[in-house]
Image (cartoon, rainbow, N blue to C red; front, side):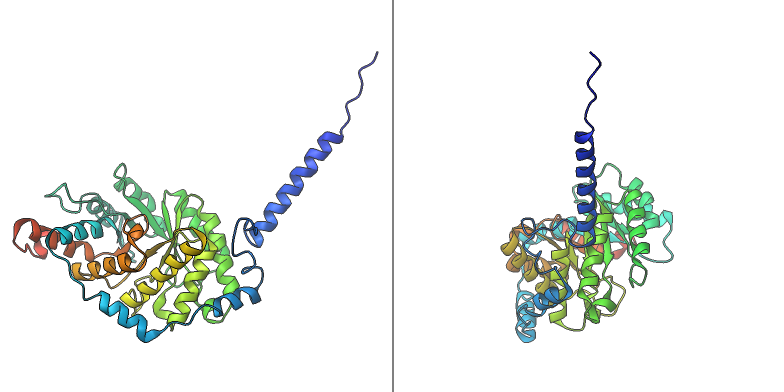
Length: 349
């Protein structure tokens, strides 16, 4: 008996199923990037420009006087001795040690990496910093400098600091940084689109960069000094969180107004409320203008009293800074020796 010909129906059905699955995947990336009602509580919010705008403008208005008064009141709290020593070490461990200058060289980045790994060469008990933060073309150099230490490499991307580039350029910038070894990506939002009310464009760009970043954690920079109002900072925070940010970040450090206690407090309230609503925890990174131990401790008090102790960890809270580390080291040395060593006893970044 001749062999019975096999039906090609199963093969065709399997092929059709694969095509249908791929088509659905493409559609989900273009629109909600796999956010179905079962997976995202905000699928209805991001269904259209109108629904997103309605949600953002339905957020409670910010009481400017109350916000600034609370930030100022929390800033008056002081801690002493053992608690201060703990706070200093915690702050050191939360720093993204940063160099973002046109004059950056491989040698400067290597030196920065060495300092991140051993902030105080005379005391190996000093914690490492959380990360070093550099431009994409310096990622490989930074990665080699901190290899084996646990210090992360963060890279700015998406045409930092202005963000004025086509989406394709921004995504290529992000992919290049990740390919070079970046563990974290610090992107900037399109402030022009945000201030024009094109919230969906901002949302979709964050989603696209999140996808391009792959395994790297994504920090979304709002440039709060350019957003004009606290209400806008609250709206930007929610766009970032809904779009999949791992961190929300105040500033690039390149404008006149950067991180302040008030705008950081507002963002801490946002991540607290987001976790209460969704169960998802998002980090916060104030950046720019935080230069002293006293400043850093004020921000740690804000974190503890607003978001709670779950955020007192460098996985969830960071300082974007360069000069802050030196002051923390000098204060640490003073607590240990009783003498204030001065800036000549720490390295110049």
